[in-house]
Length: 287
Image 1 (cartoon, rainbow, N blue to C red):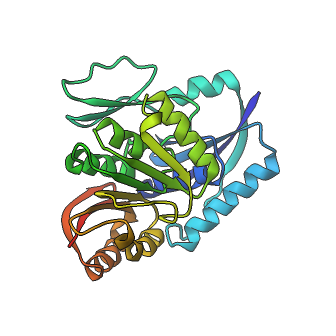
Image 2 (cartoon, rainbow, N blue to C red):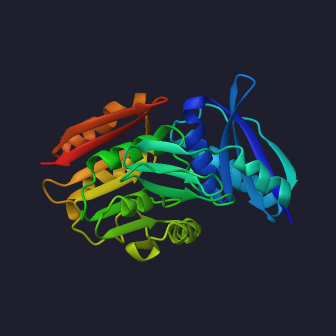
Image 3 (cartoon, one colour):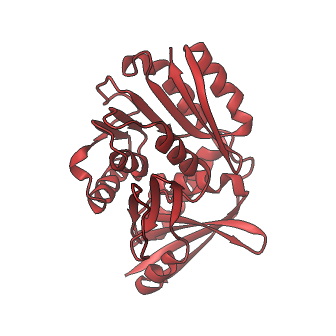
């Protein structure tokens, strides 16, 4: 069994968005690497036809260009890798990440002594998983650790790998609904939840944004691209009552003003702001 490996250079602030777009396009995994003064994204497909891989890569890059995250389509290389090389190569990109005193993200092959009261989300090689290493996932996890209260009903919109929903379960959320329009992403998210022992606590659904989410929720999460966040905000009142929290991310500094304006126009008050590597996460409360 062999893997197709796509590698492309990107500007560092955009690496997580590119990795996520490739995963959503069909990659079985993606990782970011700093090498020779540049950031590279490597994405992996197992046993897929070459033409299919190329098509998925080009569609993902075209979508990023369409929403304004890429000015030009970067050149990429396509090579193959044998199973054992993949499994060993995957591990070099990950190490334990302590998001907060209450939350850590840890690869399954690395021993880790959690602090008292610290919950651990476990990663495994070969799974398409937001690693929490930087950018949007890291700041979303920080916001979640700071603002989630035990028993809160949570909706994770565009769950992808499921990392935010899994973290919410570990942090003591009550009812959790996680949606994604991609049935493959939902399948992988369910596998990741099972790996972490919380499969029975998260209701994963294949649906578009909030179409399949029956509220009310005390907290809504959305780590997705800026145009999708903007489209989501007007729909929030259907599931988020006054006093409910909205954690939004997936946008860069130059897009923040548009998000803030949309939130204010929808009657939200800003409660917290997180920034990492040019990416922004906002916590707002519906008034």
